[in-house]
Length: 185
Image 1 (cartoon, rainbow, N blue to C red):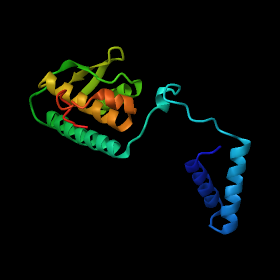
Image 2: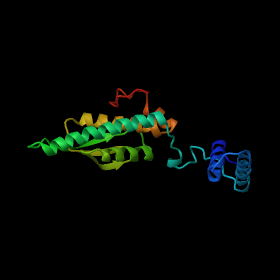
Image 3: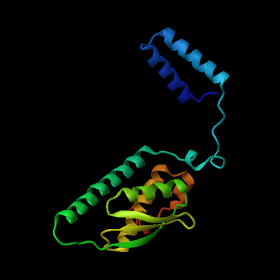
Image 4: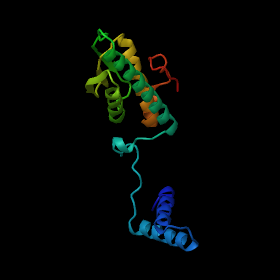
């Protein structure tokens, strides 16, 4: 059977295809979608234990906006620092590689965190592993390894709150402030 949200969506698509809303179009859309549901039944959604990692992802819009805002701001700041480095004479570059331990061993979250780190100018993940969850980050302007670890922990916490499963959020813990992420649940 078709889930209610999908049913309404398919009827709306039917109405868009006809170009106008009328009682006949709504009724025929309901009948066509019901027939599709009967002729081509879908299997029930898998439980979290049966699902692949990408199927277990939950999208939380507010946490997602918060993640995008922090990443966007981080991109602006790092681009300004990099532009200043290019324009000014002399070099302030002090590179280093920092090992950042993650609290979440989800492939989805680890991949998202490493991709966000790679998007930020001046940082690049050079080694990522799942067991134990760890990202080695090459930093162009290294001031303090603790600062890099806090930034990565903050991104991990935001990514987990935006896309993690309820179990991953619980595992993240309520003591994010103490782990340097600067967030509280």
